[in-house]
Image (cartoon, rainbow, N blue to C red):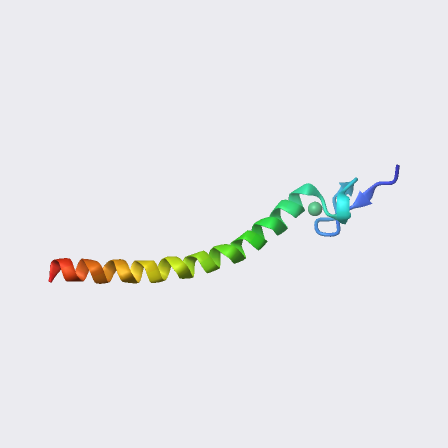
Length: 59
Ligand SMILES: [Zn+2]
């Protein structure tokens, strides 16, 4: 059986798609981070509302 080489970190082994499991996880993590960015924006608008409610309470 021929060994492949990970096209990301150049580690030798048998990988599906030419990328080792570790690099696959990293690439997946990066993809997830992109989704987190969207979530952060949603949180921001929520926090804005939260501070406004607090102001009404305090004032
Ligand atoms: Zn790799």
